[in-house]
Structures are given as structure tokens and as C-alpha cells.
Amino acid sequence: MPSERWLPRGFLILLLAVLALAAWQWRHGAPLSANLMELVPGESPDALELSAEQRMQEPLNREMLVLVGSADRQQAIATARQLGEAWQASGLFEKVQWNLQADLPALRQQLLRGRLAMLAEADRTQLIQHPDAFIQQRVQSLFDPFTGFSLVPSQDDWLGLTGRIQNSQPARGSVQLDIGSGALIADADGKSWVLLRARTLGNAFDMQLPLQVAGLLEQSRQQAASHDVQLLAASGLLYAASGQQQASREITWVGGGATLGILLLLLLAFRRWRVLLAFVPVLVGMLFGAVACVAWFGSMHVMTLVLGSSLIGVAVDYPLHYLSKSWSLKPWRSWPALRLTLPGLSLSLATSCIGYLALAFTPFPALTQIAIFSAAGLVGAYLSAVCLLPALLKGVELRPAQWPLSIAQTLLDIREALLRKIPTPALLALLLAFCAAGLWQLTSKNDIRQWVGAPPQLMAEAQAIARITGYQPTSQFFLVRADNQQQLLERQAALSERLDQLVNMGKLQGYLALNQLVNQPGAQQQLRAALDQLPHHWQPLLELGVSEAALQNELAQLQALPEQQIDDALSGPLAEPWRPLWLGNTPEGVAAMVSLQGLNNASLLRVQAQDLPGVQLVDRLG
Image (cartoon, rainbow, N blue to C red):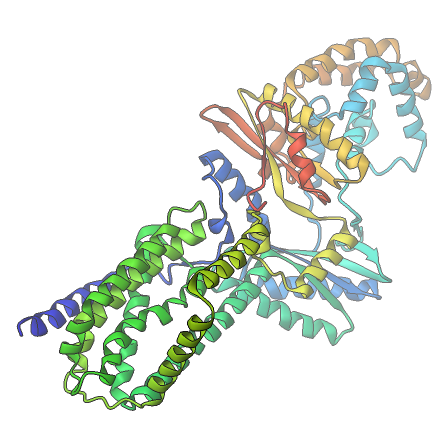
């Protein structure tokens, strides 16, 4: 028949076109993604929220925090130095930092420029409302050697504003600076722990980098252990590496196990090597599914490959439809067998595609991608089974084994006997009761953290690092929008009042907000006006020996300081922790984030944003 000639040829042309499209899609490498955030259910975030999420997630996905611990402090410092040099030379990292390299002149300049803009609220209130107490504290600090190290000498700041700014900076956990080496060290568990931070060139969703970083870390662990040094590490890269390894194992077990089982079943049932060609539709289906996914979504998530492995069992069912005709069709020929089973094959394709495509309308991106992959894969497998496989099996004479037929007949006999004893309505009632019991216990919780089985070792090390350093970032944050910078700082200040209550209750370890770094323009003006009253109160400084000319000169310098905006405050080295929080100008005004540390109860956060205009909690994982 003509169809037996043009169907295989037409399908081969289609297959070559799909292969060419696949090659073009893979021209820059595998278009695979491991980013779990792409699978998060819920409404799509707006452009600003998405930008904020990417900004907040970047340190978690690109940075690795390592503690180098030893009972010998100098050994820990030496090992950290060696690791830093070796890792920097590995080509995997953009920057590896094991010691503090501060630009002291730039720090001094920023403190002097920001004496009005960066003064903490408590100090500002004291200067305005209680100038006598403010001056008296300054006199005491000049005589007290335990008030702390000041970057700015007293003769450049007689009023001590820079020292107050320096001392009011948010605490950085339990890590202290080692003056001799510049290393950041925390003491715990009878060891000195040197902090090492490494920033990779790529991120945790790179398909190669996480495994390379994990391998380098394991090699470094072994080298450090030979010197009785312990390494603790925490990074999204390590979780990504673990996830990739787990996905690879699951693909191997699920896909490989199903493949071997199908091949063995085909050989045992049909006893011809050429029936293994029935696996061709499976390969074609996987190809069609992958190409459709990349074409539709731009990339394919590795989770789709894992869950899409179930497609193997469905795709191989198409050739089995007409191969099974060999028990009744004598002699068996591929094209006649196909014509006998084609209506059933087509109905099977239609029902399967309807079922899979129904998943595409769920608010769960993971299911949508799996639906597209599976539906396209089934279409490819169907076309391969109908158009190509009969030509490949042409001339094959099948003499199938009788044991599958015997098993099927036995199962049918059992079914008939069961139906004679228990009527169909009773069986239906039992089935409905069973389903109802399951539905009664059904609950819904859109939290992607339930999908992630974090390895106990990584969790234990992350918790140990948080305990030792006091540094525990969270994925939740607040997004604050406003018409202008003044309003933005006001809204962040209102939020800060509520977050301070959580900190005092022990529910939150800390937070970072721009209003901690720079004062509102109105507050700067209020402070500038209060400076005019200081000459009436600085007599204790004069009695100490400070000349009035020096104080008047400093007062003139303070009055001449320009009003600082957020960009001005962020330009100095002291602002490095706050710099990622500033999102800048937006079409609606300006926006910034408030990051959180050591959250104990995520449900409390939603309450904090209530009745605060422009304040939004972002927690896409929960």
C-alpha cells in the first residue's frame, strides 16, 4: 500500500527536523535548569519583586561561607590563608577572602562626611533633647580607654559623632577581628574558627559549577584533616550539588530500571531480538518532549527529566498494542496488526494527552512543564509507533511465549469468580469509601521546602556555622516601595519599630534596613538646627582643654555638610552590607529591601507588614 511507503519517509523527515531543532537548542550547552524557584507555585511576581528576589538570592547562590577551625589559633589562620590562595587559583571563584582588607582612609572620610546623616536615632535624640548629657558622655569617653577604638582621631571630631556612628553599627554576630592577621575569628567548642568567604563566577543553578565546588571542598577537607583542622561549609552551591547527584541517581534508577525491565519483558514474551526496536518510540518520545519543553519554556528543569521518566512505560505501550496481536493474528505482520489496533492507539493517545494537558492549567509551574513534556513526548512516541516502527518490523515473524497469555487468563478467571461472590455495586461502594477516606485527610500547603530533602550533614554544618558566627540569613525579606527617598526611609523606620520588637522577644536575630545607615532628610535638618544650641552646653569640653576655636571650626564644618541621600551614603565602604538592599528608582518611585537574620517563626512576619503602606513580605518558598 502507498501509505506503507510514504508514512516512514514522512516521519523520517519530521524526525530530522526535530533533531536539527534540538541541535540548535543545545548549541550553547545543555538548556537545563536546576533552579527550584522556577517551580514555585503562585502568582508570577512583578518585575520589581522578581529583581528583588534575584538580588536577595544571589549571595545564597554564589557565595560559600567556610569556617576553618583548629585548637591552635595560628594553625587555623595559616590553613585559611592556604585555602584562600588555592581556591583563588582554582578558576572557580571570582573572589576568595579570608582576611579583612579595609580601606581605612575611605572609612574615615565616610564617617566625617556622614556625621549628621549617619548618626543613630538614640544619639540624635540625645543631642537634640539632652545636649548636656551628650557633651558629658563625650567628656567621659575622652578619658575612658574602654570606650572602643575610633577610626577618626579626637582632634578631627571633638564632639565624637564618628565614634557614636561607629559604635552604633549593627552587630556582626560573634566574629571578631584579629588585628595581627586581619582574619575574622570566632571562638567556640574549644577551637578558633577563621571565617573564609568565597564568591563563585557562576551560581548554584549552573549544571557543572556546584559539583566542581563540592569536589574542591571535599579535597580541601581531606588536606585540612591531615593537619588536625576542621572545615565547616554552608552554601546554596552545596545543596545544588547534592540535588544534582540525587537527581542523577533517581534518573538512573527510575529510567534505567524501567528500561531494563521493559527490554527483559519484550525478550521473554516475544523471543525475538528485533522486538527491542519497540523501544524506538520511547527514545523518540523523550526527544520530542525535551524539544517541546525548551521551545515553550526556554529551558527544561532537571525535575522534569526525573518525573518525566514515567513516560517510558506509557510510550512503550503503543508498539505493545500491535505486538500483542501476535497471540491471535496468525501469521503476524506489522502493518496489518497496526491497522487492527490503530483506533485503540489513537484513543489511548487522546485520553493520555487530555489527562496530561489538564495539568498544564494548574498554578504549579512544575506540573505545567511536565504536562508539556509528556504530551509532546506521547505524540512523538505515537507517530513513531504508527509511521516508523511497522516498517522496521517488516518481515518479522513472531511466535510469542504462552506464559503471558496464561497469566492473563488466570487473572480474568479470578475477576469473574470475585464478581460472582461480590456484586459490582458493593465493590464500587468499597472503592468510593476508600477514596473518600483519603480525600478526608487531604491538606494543601504550597511550600517548596517540602520538596527539598536537605542532606543531614549539610544542615548540621549550616546550623553549626549559624551558632558559631551568629550569622543566619533567611530567604524571606520585606520589599518597601515609596514615592521618594524621604517616604521610603519613613516606611522603613515604621517597619523597623515592629522588627525591633521581634528582636527583643528573641523571635528574630536581627535585620538590615537602609534607615539604619542614613537618616531621613527631615531628621538631618532637625539635627543641623540643634547644632546651634551646642555652644551653650560645651563648657565641659572647654574645661578639658579643647579650644573654643576648634569647637567653632568643627561646628562650621558640620553646618556645611551637604544633605545626604541614599546613594551618597551607599558610596562608602561602611555601607557594603546595605548596598544590595537598594533597588533604586522605579517607574512608581523608589524601592528597597529589608533583609532578615535568624528567623524563628516565619508566620510572625506577615503580621509585621499589616497596615504599613508600601511594605510587602516576599516569601516565595512558603
